[in-house]
Length: 345
Image (cartoon, rainbow, N blue to C red):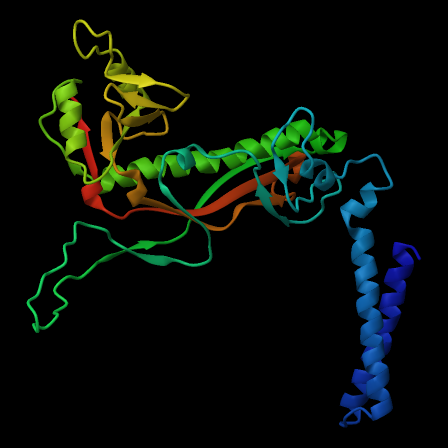
């Protein structure tokens, strides 16, 4: 049965169902047992017809019989050119005709920069959390028989979700020709942009909660030692990119050939004494550098990794589909004593 026949049959069954309702209301009575049985049977038939109609309206079903590409099948496999990337539950085809929440995309094999920094990650959260605000708490000692008094109280910090979102457009031409590599690269970049903003927030949260270390003039071993030594914990130093290259150019002495900072990867490295450090343009607090025990920074990831939404209406006259990728996350510093900041004059 084709789509039009299914729609006509559903309309007929619906009219028949409405007649039962009209009879009951017109005669001001309940339906008889036989009428109730027939009514329920019609409801079941109508639900079955609706299922068939929705299936035939689904772009995936349509695309199996014509040239248009079923992107939900293309994206879930790793292509020859786009490795380690998959998208779950994405329905994107040239026949898209409604506002679709396409579900979750998961970037397989890709780890955001911040996940390599040593911060504490709490994934798959479903609600806000009150976390204990960790500080230097020391228990009391009481004599034998003395009363235990609760003299120490712990404050809390609220870890709650924020929307990290980015919106861009994609032309229907790309969808129509079935260019899976272009689509994957497009979605992948949107997903990474959410993680970049979270990385920036990690640095900003540390700067906001850290106490300032004053009086540091110039990049020297003594000044960086002072900054690191005042951190309550195992410190990692975070540099804005330009500041890192300033430190990288400074020799620690005249004879050893060692420099203050050395990089061993795209974003990371060590100070001359082995203290780990990271540098990035994502650390945007001007010339401020920080030293922090990063395990006291908590990143909460709420729900699945990424949500992607398609809107074919807003820019339909231009032949564009508006794509929004959203990640729900929150960042908190649980111990302000574990972070110090400084502007090296």
